[in-house]
Image (cartoon, rainbow over all chains, first blue to last red; front, top):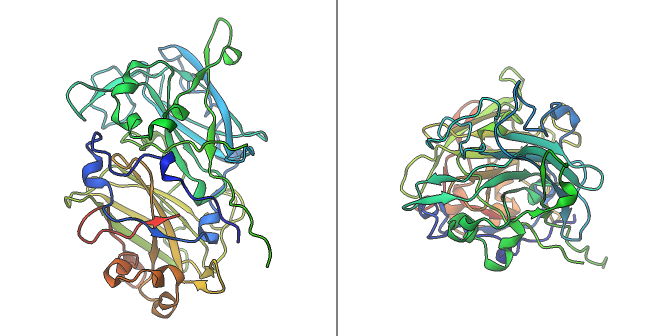
Length: 230
Length: 182
């Protein structure tokens, strides 16, 4: 059975990162147990169009009115490490509204809710691995990690890929955000890999007179090289 | 050309809007052979983790993983459950059959559990094995690769009834669950 390439720890944040307070009691203290990939790891749930609603990809059209905020297009491709597109895979997003407030009971931020914005998106990648969302620019928001802590504007991304081994949840940030230098969640990523989480402003993606455009490609683990037959 | 993997980030506490996709009831309770697996997630100070998302992936009762799309196969194989205020979760499902391993040995029946939470910068992965599969567990490649019996025991659910099991997850410290590098 062919498996997937192993995560290089240099590509990902460590479980324990002192600047991010919640990791102190939640990061495992023991190293993980190595597990050769089996069918349990090389398979995973797959989705189809039947799992999507008609406006799941357009967060500006999920309510009667239009949400407040700068309309943006966020698009990109889901690829593996060989650059091979990952077609037909589910991409989920969730985000705060333009005021930095999530439509979530536990969000204590004083920013106003927007009755026309839920902040959740879903789509399947096309044959070339492309996904595309229409949404609004999320706001930054304060959090309790340290004094005067602010999360930079971000969109959460959840991608399944072909297998349990390729499952990824991450966050996309916006270029030029001065809060990135002060955000322990972003800074937890090894320095050389951080800019992989920052979208690119792309005039080709904009809709003239209507929406700004960003591209954000997502790279999942690729298949491991097949060993030669003995 | 080599493409650089996208780094993981925490799921954060506000993921509820994505929950409508997926369910913790893979089968109806009235299904013959239905079982319930419930448990709680705890942090290193013994506090419940009330904002975790668990995803489960398993074979059906015959040991086959679903080969079609979610919602279009007889058994979905995939489940999702957000933990409640006490860190609690549950899945209603069927016990999976044994599946092939990476070598000639078959694997004992198990479910794969992926854990996301605020404070977890990357996901954690573990497995749930069954206490009534003593013989299969004794020959399971993963369980046998773990030397410490107490660590091995963290992967085996406890029976709580004829069709119910408990599986607690301890992220850190005493009784820490064995997490897997996959």
